[in-house]
Image (cartoon, rainbow, N blue to C red; front, side, top):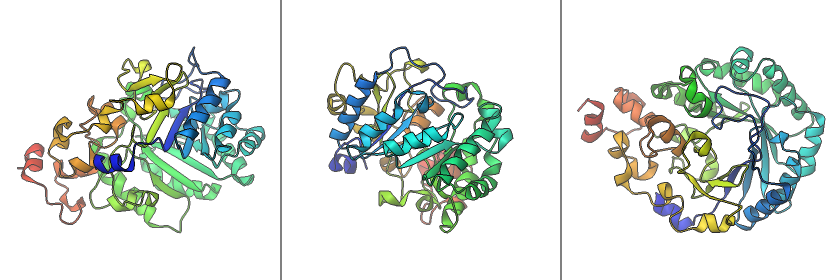
Length: 380
């Protein structure tokens, strides 16, 4: 499948940009250890130049994130610079200090969407974030919906909220939320210190069917989206993939192929979620925008090699024998690395867990496990 991406051409179509690492929360599942701003964050002038560079490279969508992006003193000017260049822009906020002024700034910037992080009902959400944060983010959602602003919610699935998902969707529907993205919390950053919150790989065997069930009801709201770290393959694969891709199955991690992440100090990664110096591991940092242009970093020979130069002999564990290995390439890079320390060995996989636990009823028609897959699972 990487050959298809090569033929399409490597282009940073989607970018997640950490405007600042400053944050007014200290969430127990924060992957980036957010809190204080980096000491060397890009200036406004540098950010506006980066916005021009993203547009020039054909970037189609930018998500402004953090930290808490609204703590960047000129976040809306950066968003406006992108939208004026024809880039679709949205922002993800924790909602703690979201006001009518923020809504006005969002409209001024031409943002296509505002998204808020909501991690369950009050007990679960406040336990993950901070006391009183549930009430504040619900008010932020209500304020945005009332203003006619397209409003989304993002939820990290963890052990505190995993049994609330159906009821949480009903709450969001009542609030008027248009779309809802679900993603699993990975044991990295702060969540690496709170393994008691992390769902187990075998939990995918009920999480994936539940997401498929909720997506199947297209008339219900909010519209449900499964993030790229949820999957892969099995009986429900086509139901959980985003139709906009035009392909009803996972085509592998696109970090460094069609996706790019920018840290607030100008570091460039294939995906913002991948570790860097704050995690004691900067192997995924491809360069810094103060030293080279985005085009130079993106086009450098050997860049993003973990995906662009993929070969099956890099795969480990079950991934090395999986029937989908050439397509999947180990699933989400961030999830694989955080779970196993190896970008190319991912235990957080629906197909893998169905095979190793003997739940063959969850596989797609024709997915009879191979002798190699059965041998790995101890069932050969």
